Image (tube, rainbow, N blue to C red; front, side, top):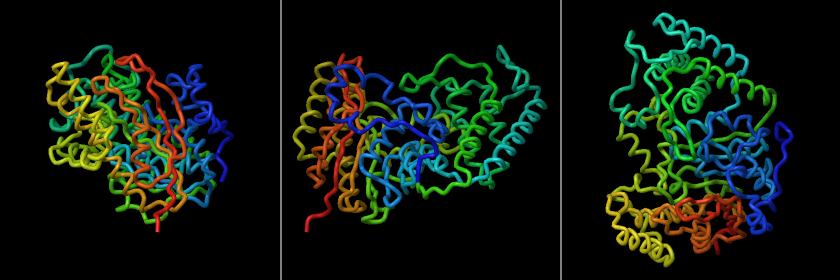
Length: 457
């Protein structure tokens, strides 16, 4: 199966043999290497993390690994589905695993191409018109925006427990009210095959058009929007999805499955000895709470309703930040015998004491580093049972210095862990470099390329 359009992808050598020279010239520097190219827009930008690794990187490893319709690709940290979509476009069967409930929803929708695009577009316009009528009955013209808040009509809002989960001021009262009215209209179509696509369109509109969020690259809150055209913003996203589905109409593509679950329990969801390749990007060991990236849409659209539900979800994550560490966590025991990881943890703790950093989160910096690599050790150990002999793996990871400027060479450490578990390290490719303001250094973002030779007899 060929991709649906002609695409130009960098050869794998762009990420490997000449990486040191290219870094010196600055060619792998900055955000350009991570940017979504116009030719990759279809399907991928239905909903996408700002820092998602790009489709062209996935395509390069599909080519390098010699993958085709005979093979099965796994992404155990599939996020918003970049590997899944790109593999499907190349005619390759794929499986994704994701612990974040909204990211799981998004990736599963992005590989569902079996709906009637014409019907979806027709129904979307009908939903838009009916919602505009409802708003008009309330004295709100969604196409004529208010310049200042109104105190006339009572506005819909979230349940107080759910509202407390949001970043403060992440969405203004009137846009939230109109979003909830539109959401009610969508729920009237809950049994229809296009409902999930309509909901994902609202999520994308909510994050990038309706809310006050901004990404730089961390999620934050920008200047409040008193009002914004909610219905038109959603309809634009819905019609984009419908138009992309037209591109694959009448074509046959392989299945793509997406499981909601913990990457440390791969064998509990995937058949033994079934996977030919892994292309993925796990979380990095830093202070980024990945649930904040999806918090607004998760809460407003009803995927997470309470702090308890948020905690339950976080417990299925690899521990990569201190806001996801719990008393009964034990993954650190899996790296007790790894001297460098222990040394890094001790260095972080020593620097913390020198600097007098005594908050509860700062006291966890050393521990979360060990929990992260212990969790990745559990994942890689579990993964072996689902891999076929000769399976090839690509892990996109990045060096970090988030914990009091102590450098963590993530790629090299994961490579050492993998080798100790019986994997063969083929190479570590440089993907790009990122400038760290804290350390004034270029941090490497790399692809650790492994091979599973099979169990020794």
